Length: 260
Image 1: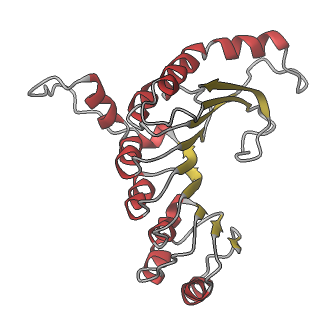
Image 2 (image 1 turned 90 degrees about the horizontal axis):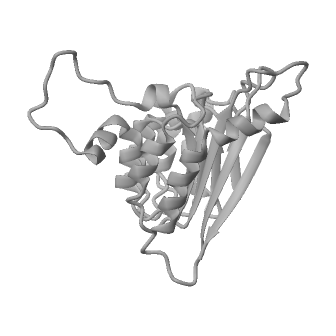
């Protein structure tokens, strides 16, 4: 049984009704909440709720209280930018093996230190990375047994930080399926048509990201010998006509790499 809550339905009455109804649905295996405008009320209403039958949670990050109610969830999907609060909720889902979500680099990076301050000791490259991307570090900490990871961007950064965060995800030794979606906004459009050469140049600029991702998937030591590791790289067309699109954006190119 799948329960989907539309975007305009997070009224106090509905939230209270959900809190009363959800525990009485023993066959409920999937919850989808597309948007959340009142995270505090949802957290209060579901504070003592436990949904042991739920295996898949697809939610707005502000509805992280739902994830906290599903201790047996194995798949957690974020419908918008994954916040540190949302990722921290995964500490209550120890069985999670699949995570998918959007990352907004402009809001997820940690603030840099004030000008003129000097650290007592120089941190390692890895420590600098984990300090710079708190949600990514939290995901690795709270979901160390992930076997599948689907990363998307919330805005047109062109995969600017993928090379950094992939170094952090290298800690996920059980990871066997990695999908990276890179938003590309074409600046040379004319009448909605993108010249093939421009598309080719855009993809070639991201060769370094593919190289880092390939090296990551080739070094998974805790994956069984009879299981292939898979890397999927998607370059998503993001033009002025569909800038607001998220889950429905068309795939410009998709390449699949398999490693025995």
